[in-house]
Image (tube, rainbow, N blue to C red; front, side):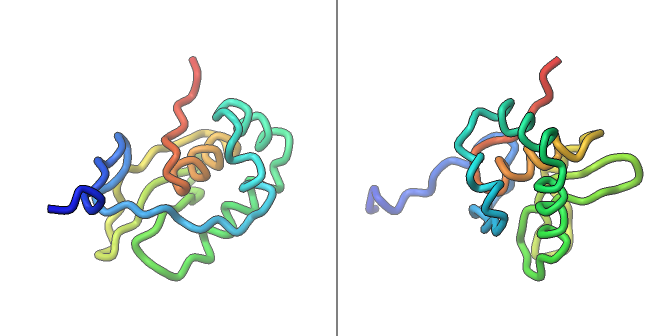
Length: 116
C-alpha cells in the first residue's frame, strides 16, 4: 500500500504496540541525548532527579505505559499493558541504573545494559 504507512519494526527489548512516553522531568529530558553511560553517571550524581522519575511513574494513570518501580531491594523497569500485564521487565540494583533504563526506554531510545 502506501510506503509511508508501513509500521516500523519494533526494536529489540520493546513490546508490541510501544509508543514513546511523555517525560515531565525537564532535567531528565535535558540529558536524554547523552550517551547512556553519561546518563547513568548523571543519575548517580543527582539521585533526586532519578527519584523524581520514580515518582512520576507512580503517578501515571493510563495504560499502556512504561514504568519504573521499587520492589524489595530492586528496581524494575518495563511496560504495563492495557490488560494489566507486565512486559519487557528488567531489574536493577540501583535507582540510577533503573532511571537510565526508564528514560531511554520511555523515549524509545533503547535499553540500558550494565557494563561489566
